[in-house]
Length: 624
Image (tube, rainbow, N blue to C red; front, side, top):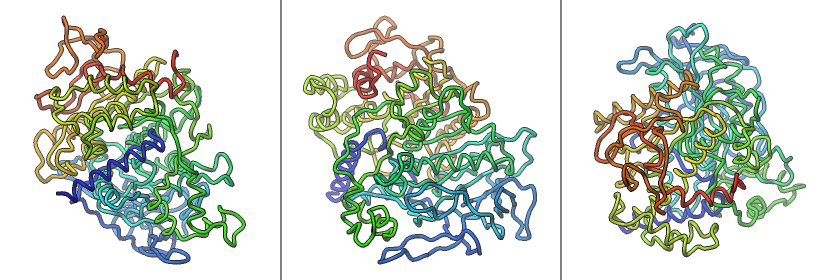
């Protein structure tokens, strides 16, 4: 038990370090259970081979060669019996899978190259060459090289929760996966759901069982696309030798994959005009980066967006980086040495040596605003209306912070670190926040509960609420959800509750069947349906009231704000006004839920007024 507590305390240190570096970019995810398994065998072919990195001197040794597999619509087959798809650079051979009670089997095309791979290290993605032979797209590709920072206890914990089972890693990683119903598509094509994974922009892979789109595609008659993209220094190098628009390579990878969808998704039965981007954590941050980088009157390559537990526009703290990580990495690897520059030297360095250095020295590489892939003032852009004018949905989980704050027991000390960079009256702010989260009430029984809930609301929930309400205020159709359900078979560790990323198996329908409850099964089906309903017609939404439009109704069980004469009041006694427009998934008070319950936002947001001045100060929107 002592070792477990040490591990949890180390994770808290890891999260604190991440937040000190750049809070908005550090949303961890995804969760995959320890029992999830998937073969990563990649049958060797004559084209588009991959190489998972190994440690050692000199160039990385190629292992696990082969190509990834993918699934498309079974317009025709090949001698092996599986589906085929002809895309702009060649022919893909996929595989077909069936699910219980599904109306259609699913064609899977996994590990489809959407760019030249491996890419030039620290270079933008490039178009892939034509295939000289068909690609065997029947297994996931390796992950792009991931970063799990030390201390070792923290590294082990994060790997066990967010990277389990651990996939092979390689710079040869620019592949995507397509999951498509095998039945004939309608004449105008199916809706397409394009997913971006989380991982703090430091780690993550599309090849996790949680992100298997087979159930989602089969039960909801949509096409699901999941894609890899580069992270950490491989995806966001900060070299001064690169052009201003050459730093955010991971974002360029995402855009390259979206462009691939526009050119090729019709070959799988999808419509390039019906694409919805959805992302979780850093994937939601990336989605908001897309939304804010497309100006008014532009035509982005998607018509809807869903942001799960993350956004870019409102940050809880200012980004403050330590000594330039690029220079530290260069020095650690002896660069420039005999090379002409640090960039040339690091391009020649062993990939495993780079990974080892950035992990052990905790060198964090974040995206840099370039006003192409990442605008410098997203909140001001949003409020001015100069962003993509498409329907959006966003939401958070009710206990996001529990996985980030394990081991924390001193509320005042923790809040000093969490809020210290912001208000001038820090002592008064801490006292006010502690009073707003009183122990012994609303499930806050321990200092850990208290700290975790402050983290949940300050870092995730309240910024997301502001993002949603500001989007609605400029006329963008906006829906918001609140996930509040936990199950024994989704807990990475005991007592994590409704933690960050725990909604993902429910959304994808990849929940474990072991110990599955009736509520869990029904809730997952309902959430899949709502996400798909939004994707099929974003303007009509997922099935409940858009933000700022709902009509007041009966206040249901479990309200957490004070009720005086039927009114809601905030911590300072002010009367809160709102409409019934927040879709709650799961439980409401002690009432178990297997669908959505619509409530007023203020029922869960009434403490957000404490933090809103901080977001506005940092975003430069105070007084807007």
